[in-house]
Image 1: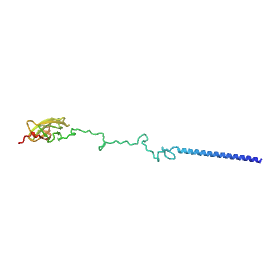
Image 2: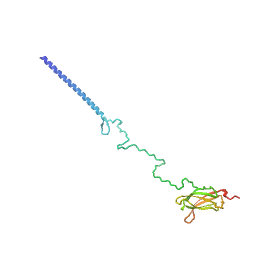
Image 3: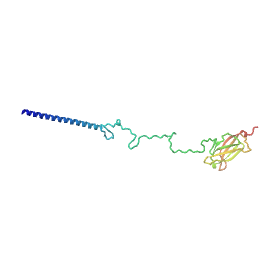
Length: 229
């Protein structure tokens, strides 16, 4: 009878021991699973970017990949789509100052490219050249700025008038009018000195006197001069 009680007690003790072992094993398994779940959750939390309120995502305060040491990357656009790229400069033409777009037109009074042998406020003579050699006939060209485009001329050799006349320019004052006329020594007059003097002038509307006189000299062809004795 006593031996039977011992057997029952031994079996009960073994059952209790086995139960304890099973419970301990279950506890370790749960602890391991919880630890694994915690580690996984921690790893998942560390690997998930969370907004920090400043527009930057990261883990433990670190910035997103590609953002360097925390400085914001430089972009070519600002919010709203406006580009910050500087506008290309427009080359200005040389000349010391930028063009204003309101240039004054060049005025042409008929003098461009012309060289006058003599001139005053009313007349400009282009030809003949001063002291040019002339014959009994020669041509005079130039411009006049006279009332009603009319003027006169005389040609003499220092002793007498060899030729005279009236000329009409292409237009009257205040514009410059072109003129061209021919001087012809009167027949049978011949020059008596080697130098001839051409004078062009405007006739005064007030008293008929010559005004704005302009004079040039020419040299006669020696064949026109009287033979020396």
